[in-house]
Image (cartoon, rainbow, N blue to C red; front, top):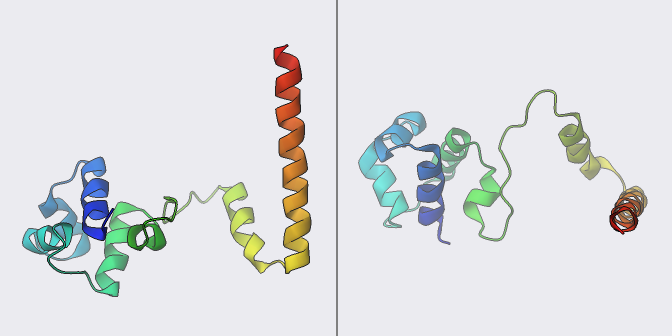
Length: 117
């Protein structure tokens, strides 16, 4: 899906008109229309403001294959904070953590299979 279509989809999910999004971004409805119809591409600064207004990660907004994530997480989202911190780990530590996660998922799935029967 092109950038303009993603902007339009996200805007309509919020129930906003082009004018409402424009007001939040600091532009006008005609400009939002141009972005949505792919007549022009927003600058990086404007893309950041659009992502902020729509609470969606900038990478999801710009790249088609990036899963949708909120731009901001709740202050009490301890798991989200931990997941964000994984990038700070060295490669061997990330591999160990991946193994632990895989083992826990396998255990949970096996428990679900055995309890269904």
